[in-house]
Image (cartoon, rainbow, N blue to C red; front, side, top):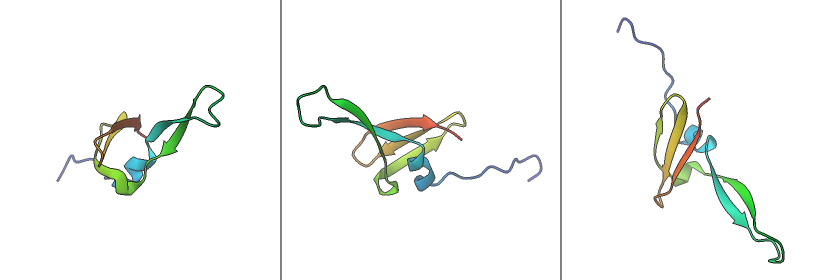
Length: 70
């Protein structure tokens, strides 16, 4: 159609690469827990939406993550 812009469709794998899960690394238990960023796999993605400025990913276990759009 005239006037349409070429927009690339985001895949679940690409959306998963843009967000990360933050987990606590307890180490040996003597120090304070440290935050660690863990990537999300494409198999975990239930749904995702690209808003242009950011991407929202919902995982199969119901967690919601937000990441930067590229």
